[in-house]
Image 1 (spheres, rainbow, N blue to C red):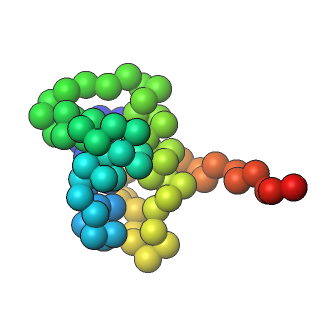
Image 2: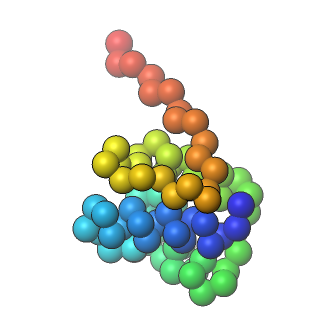
Length: 82
């Protein structure tokens, strides 16, 4: 998956939720500047990309359609509280 896909997801998510890209970056990547770096042609590891894509999949708004051209991972199973 290319970094363009991550940026596309982030921008759609931010726009839909009324958030700044830096806020989404903090939520998804634990770094408010990370997505701006990707927009500026920075690279990332496959592991980081996987973690961020999974975060988007797990937190994607139910009233926003996932982009058809981006494969969506299955949701992570949530652990139940005891």
